[in-house]
Length: 116
Image (cartoon, rainbow, N blue to C red):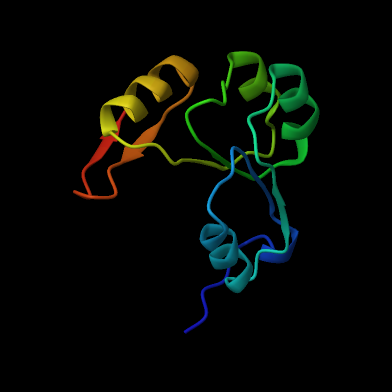
C-alpha cells in the first residue's frame, strides 16, 4: 500500500549536507522525493540562511551549526535528520541548537524516544 502525504513528495525539498551517504539519497529518490540537493560539506550560517527558506527536510552531520537565526528563517522546515554516532552527541546538539522549539530525538538502535 502506497502511503500518501498532504503535500506532494516530488515538491518536498531536501537539503543534505556534509556528504550524507548516497544510499540515503537513493532511498529518498526511490520513495518519490524529487527535489534533493546534496552537498559534500557543511554550510556557514549566512549560506544556510539563503538555502533554508525553501527547505522542508534537512540532513546534517556534526559540523553544521543550526543557530537560532537559521531555525527562525526555516519557515518550511518540517524535519531534521542528524547522522552522528552517539545519542549523547545528538541530545547535546539538539538542546544547543533547538532550545526554542520542541524536539523529538529517536535513538535508531534502541527505538527510545526523548522529548526536549
